[in-house]
Image (cartoon, rainbow over all chains, first blue to last red; front, side, top):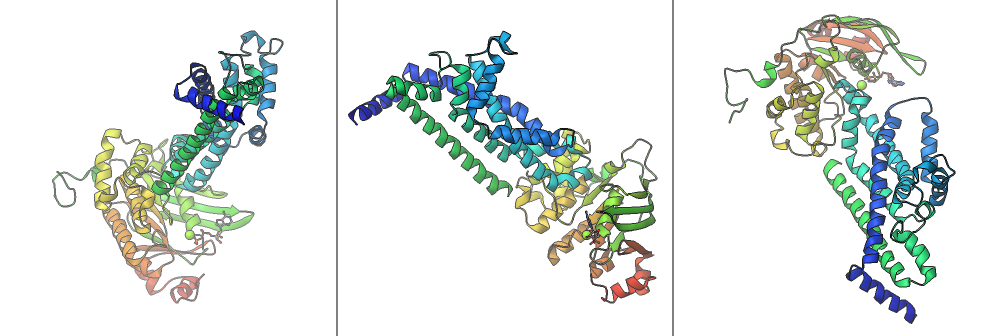
Length: 234
Length: 259
Ligand SMILES: Nc1ncnc2c1ncn2[C@@H]1O[C@H](COP(=O)(O)OP(=O)(O)O)[C@@H](O)[C@H]1O
Ligand SMILES: [Mg+2]
């Protein structure tokens, strides 16, 4: 009990003094997850819009695949990316295993399906409502895409926040492809998972508090966006 | 300050100035049929619409009025027959010279002004020319004070006026309206009818559906009466209300053919 309260006090101390080790881990985690989300947006928005507006061969298969990916445990994604990037794997020559880039790739695979699936849903719903009016004004599905994404902007922001939530909270994928190497690939979640057993309870607790803060911030932002969207655009 | 309504000017207002294109009319339909789920809903529709009169498509609910408008406007493709804009230049897009206002206005999740701006953009109006056109139609429809409001916050009547303003800004040669006042109160109905009359006065060809006889009497130069997917008659309005040619229309006028 005393150990725990002592660790808690030390954790708070690490936080308020911006302990260099802690700041470095938080910084890497944010860099990896934000990059993964950016990648997911660049891929997920057009894929989601295309799935909503166009019929093409393999469309149904792609939807099933995306939905399956959404429910996939991060460790499985980590395993697949590990096999691809390992020295014997097809992309082994790139030498990316156990680098932040590998972690970004793995997390992007986790987040892209979320962004794509939610984009598909919101764009499809909007198109049902807008299509006759848009076609009447001379816009086909392709030229309507920017307008549809713009009008779906509030829902899309919540999708991106959900994606960031999944990326920053997952531990399995970054653990496997990153390896929790000190000063290189150690993220908040991998540090918590591995440092506890090594006895560094204070660092784990400090990082846990940061993660709780991020989760609260994501949920507060999502709530605010939804409120504002409902207030302004009904 | 120039207010196009209160300050008469020698110059035509911006909307009127844009009418330079040759006519796409007449519109001719020949043997047009339409099916859905294996059922024939529109039978052998043949008629021609020339420039000029206000045409009201009249008929009970389910007669095929909305389908007919959509076939004319090109939102539906007939399973048989032809729809042709005979005046349209070869290679030109006749859709650019038409607009349609729906029973329930479809407004983008943007401000009132941005809704019109988007339509103008789709009609290739240069960005710098849009603000004047937007201001003009908002003034003419009494919506100027809502320019920066979210469009979907407007009342039902204001939303329909915005849908009309958006159509008006693109200066259509032909305007299709599908029961535009069916869900509006009498005051909003009156305002919408006034806008339609003004557009007609400026030379826009009005083609409108209604199941409201009183409205048809107020607006029509010509009645097309539909029943069960058949065009029963296309008759000058005076004549139609006086002595309809078809038995179904006579029954409809007596209130015996409600639905
Ligand atoms: N997509 C559709 N599928 C099946 N039936 C339809 C479809 N669209 C319209 N109908 C039917 O066609 C008939 C004519 O419809 P409509 O043109 O909307 O009538 P209205 O004269 O009331 O505007 C109605 O009986 C309607 O139920
Ligand atoms: Mg109808």
